[in-house]
Image (cartoon, rainbow, N blue to C red; front, side, top):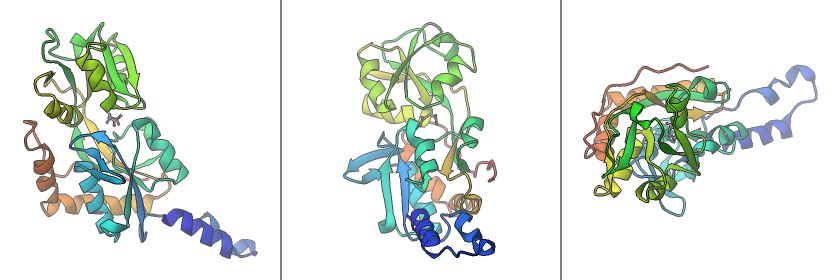
Length: 274
Ligand code: GLU
């Protein structure tokens, strides 16, 4: 990891003269990194799914590899590691991970702790219910029902706090852990980003139903250390290119082409770095 290496080097070579010590406090950047550690989800089919030891696949993984390539880091020099929603800020702030591509919505609260490149896509929160569940056609119908979310996600907040809908919250470590309780009737709905729900629906098409009543914009950002503004700007250059050269359209088609969701293939409006 470049940041750790840079810090060790700075410590080892720190000159005694106060006037020359600026290098010690200079922010490390993913620009010019030789290797990268990238956090992705392990349990979200189509986005980030673990396929073996240290191996992951999905849209977020492919976007991460594209950005890494633009930063000059080859695929074999990228190490993917699993992150849960709740871990994302922590692993970036600690420097354990260089970048996070993990269905990570850009929010004001999170922006005070981490930086965000992008968004590289805008998803929309929707609702997944059991196929035989009647009476859930939109977000208002969640009133009085039990919702499952992965810890550290913002999805329940969008319903309960932002929309003032009185729903019960049931939390699991991750969204993948919500599907069994939903199928078994322990919870009434899973409400989160449509891209995530589409992945679970594809695995259980008989037992589940996607309501298809989107009610938020979820701007998927590239999580990066708060102080790495140069890195964030380089990430944005990569994302612009990814849309311009047709890669974004190709990847969206590959991972979500069968979902029936409306896929937007133009570059999203970036939130800006720093
Ligand atoms: N995009 C939402 C969030 O960042 C929900 C999905 C997730 O937790 O990864 O909170």
